[in-house]
Image 1: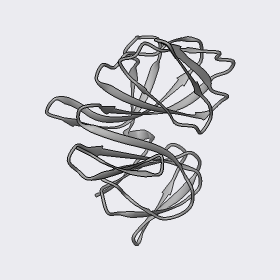
Image 2 (image 1 turned 180 degrees about the vertical axis):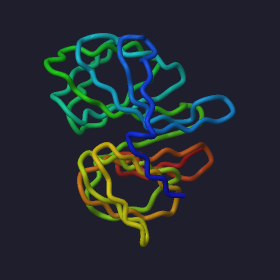
Image 3 (image 1 turned 90 degrees about the vertical axis):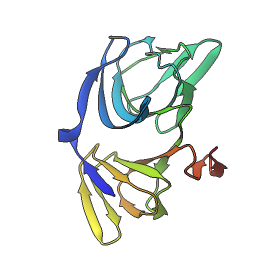
Length: 193
């Protein structure tokens, strides 16, 4: 399956902590609730991040200077184009916000999925389980004989086995449900139990 999603498909929703809004790009649910979710949000001031018990998060700043995440004895730097992974049930807050930053969020149910987030170059790579490509600027994705023109923040969802060639800056996310094989994380192939 190949799906091309645009702004018309996305859903604006309030943050769990009520202090802002997020734009939900795509989501997969299982019998117990969310398996994975992709979203974009703006961090415009210092303040707490929402708690998501049982969820692992990977955040990447895609616009703006970034900020620091601190709390529970942790200090993480959310710098542009650098994936930052953290547990959603750890109380963290944004600090050092000097200007608005837009971040891309990948959230997965810890007991059911594993994920990776990568800034993608212009070379073909096969999809691993469910793969999402987020266009950071206008560009294109070619999958087999199909060429899709992408606007900024368009999303392409690919099932396992599809090979995509990209033109323009994009972010790649791989979401794997337990029992589906391997994922690519930090350039290593990891088995999924």
